Amino acid sequence: MNRLLVALAPLILVAAPAAAQDGHTGHGQAPTPSVDPHAGHARTAPAQPDLHAGHGQPQAAPVNPNAGHGVQEPQQADPHAGHDMSGPSVSDPHAGHDMSGATPPDVETSADNPGRPGEAPPPAEALSGPAHAADAIFGAEVMAAAREQLRQESGAMRTTAIVLERLEAGWGDGDETFLWDAQGWVGGDINRFWWKSEGEGDFGDGLEEVEVQALYSRAILPFWDVQVGVRQDFHGDGDDATHLVAGLQGLAPYWWEVDAAAFLSTDGDLTARVEAEWDLRLTQRLIAQPRVELEASASDAPDRGLAAGLSSLTTGVRLRYEFRREFAPYVGVEWTTALGDTADLIRASGGSTDDTRIIFGLRAWY
Image (cartoon, rainbow, N blue to C red; front, side):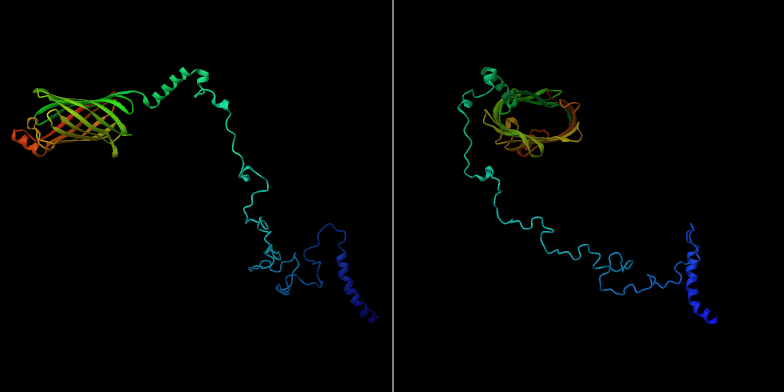
């Protein structure tokens, strides 16, 4: 009996776990956590073996033995591992093309025919009509008048201007003076009749002298005119004089307006005068205008109070306000001095060689 129990003991030990596992067969609930369904199994846990065991041989794709390692995998990380990259067809779309020659395309064009014939000349009927095609529709006389009007309106029109550069009164050295300086023109862009007038006097003694010029003006450059003509002087003492005039008037660099002229009198006296002024815009309406005037004589003229050389210099500045472009009152200061031997003649006669005056005036044009 004891021998029988010893022989059956191994079978009982093996059958007991199987019976405990089959006891839950068909139940709808999970086994209790305390029961390990794999208890007693002789399988190897996946985390126990050496993870680097067997390196150097290919691993199966689903299993990555280096998962979580900080090292770079030289084989699996390269998607092109094992690809043949030596051929040019992979990256060069023109691989195999012959790009060295300048052979034209297979499709012939007109450029491939160096000896192609020229265009046929226009037929004779195309040149049989009038010189201006519009003459055949509107008539030659009507179109001739229209073309002449277009020429006039495109640069050959006649213009007229009257510019009152200075109309002013001045106070200085105990006297009160007045002065005007005006000019204007009639004509086209190239040829014009130009006139100029200047005059000055004393409010107490009346008009002292007047100067009038009649000039032919011709444009020689876009901003410069040559002017020739005559000048007539009228003096209060009756000593009038007539001069031939040759001058140059225009716009110099830096926007200086220049008027230079030489005068030859009927008595043989040669004199010259240069005027220059510059408009400095402080605002759109407020403008400062520096002005310089220099006179010279080629010979002595004691009866006119002139000596050879530079005779006088006048400089000043005017500040004007343009209520409109055509109407601008101004205020300013001006200084005049005699130069050289002319100053000596004035001193010898008991006159003053310097004069500073405050001026008020008006600039206008039409």
